[in-house]
Amino acid sequence: MRIPVKPPDFRETLDAVIKKSKDRIHKIVGAGIQAEPKGNYYHWDKLKHLKSPPNDLTNEEWWLGIKWTRQSIYQTIPHKAIDGSNFVFGETHTVRRLLHEIDIHGGGELKASAQVANPGSRDSYLINSLIEEAITSSQLEGAATTRKVAKEMLREKRKPRDRSERMIVNNYQAMEHLKEISDQDLTPELILELQGILTKNTLDNTSAEGAWRDNDEIYVGDVRDATVIFEPPTYKEIPKRMESLCAFANAVSTSEFLHPVIRATLLHFLLAYDHPFEDGNGRTARALFYWSMLRQNYWTMEFVSISRILEKSPAKYMRSYLYTETDDNDVTYFLLHQLQVILRGIEELLEYLKKKTDEYREIEDIFRKSAELSSALNQRQVSALNRALKKPESIFTIESHRGSHRVTYQTARTDLLKLSDLGLLEKSHRGNAFVFYPAQNLREKLKRIG
Image (cartoon, rainbow, N blue to C red):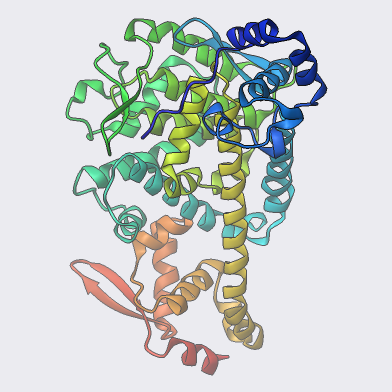
């Protein structure tokens, strides 16, 4: 990946403009330059190519005006960069708009959706979301297992057969663990514990599981072209930096309010920046984002997979780090990117829930016409039949049904045997276990029962 061009030094540019003509300063001030020209938080790497700066300014003068405005809205993050300077960010118009949309769609709208509001279906959707995040977060780090195989493994609780499958299982277990610790303060020990869960039996150096790195033989790079993108802080600073990170994570806003989504997103950035582990930094950073959101009562984020969105455009994810690192540690670039990712994740979930609602209508129509079916089947069985109608090649096991709905083995067994007794699923054996398949002509059988 190409490293962005570093912006001109603010002080040097200002001195050069003053030396050239003080009237130029008046032209810059009089141009009414905003932090986000045309609604975009431009980095110099892009701005230097744009034509027609305002007020007949040069691109360098335009950039000077932009930085002047941005500096006036910067807020300092209590965590230092490698050079000892502060990380900063600005709550721009776009940041505030995205936060508002996240609160609206990820709060009231998502909470009010029938599938999330209904306890009978909530666990099923939550399991699906946890599985999706576990798979895509692992794939971002190189796991090669297909979604189909990974989902079957997690639902059936099959033991992983290789490193890729183990990465996915670890991610799933870590996401489950986050709920257990979401009411606890973050400590360096908890971060170590989380990374240990995420990397268990996946590293060549097993001593790096649940341990800080003990050397500086590490860099962040683009594996596609071997570009060294970033060299993290020295390992000697890790204990001190993790204490600082935890203090920021646990802080309660008093005099100055910090939006919970901003805090969670900055926590994601800072852990990845510090890169305290030999491996698993990205996964741990994303996990801490979820921990922070849950801790601050954004429980609907459990249903949203950010890694699914990141997987679609990993270059943008990496570029948001590079823009920050090359422009005076301005984390606004990363913040804007992640807020867009979160919002898109929420939008995709709402689209998915609408699609599932539409899919249920056909089978619900049948149930409404059949007193026998509506009284005989529960929500879990309806969900299984809906899947069977949509994917006739589906295979159900007692273990996979149990995992999908968080019920006991006996409850899952009773559910599937009942569907088999009704002739809606066909029962067979795989070793000592039952397996179930959608019955031939399932749709017609349902209509006949109706």
